[in-house]
Image (cartoon, rainbow, N blue to C red; front, side, top):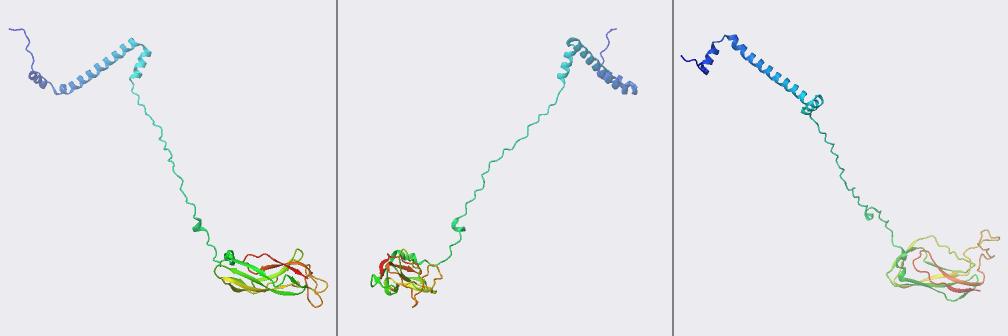
Length: 245
């Protein structure tokens, strides 16, 4: 007979397991799992003890700390929004022509054609008696178009000098007078008397006393015949020398 033990086969092992009691089948896996856990724990404890002996307490702590996984949260700085440079609104200055009030509609002044109009005084004599008068003319030369002047009387010619300053009195009326083109003549009366006087004694400064007949003649002397205009429309001509006797 041979002493060799026959090699078990899987089928023979499975047949023996099937033949075991039921409680053994249930307990066997639990026992095997417990043995495995105990074996792993024992191996880990042995490794820790060996590490402590080899490195010492301080280095062991450092290694343990190094193996700890630390989660670091990185905080990003807040995003700063750069201000966007904007151009200020462009405001167009108001147009003067559109905002300025329209000038009032007025009739053109009579002097608008003064450059084409001239005048001169013509007297019949260079001398006059005190208290007397003479008739002269104002000659107007208009080289432009006819135009209108609003006045009651266009001209007066009065005598004056450095002592006596004439101040003509104008009638209170208003007419639309036409200055024709070409040469036109306007008669005037030149008086060698004051335009007004008062009784004795004088009651107004600068107003002469009236003579018994109610007149107020100018003193004898040298005068100038000066042109006056109710509405100025022509350049004033040079005065004419007149002697009062």
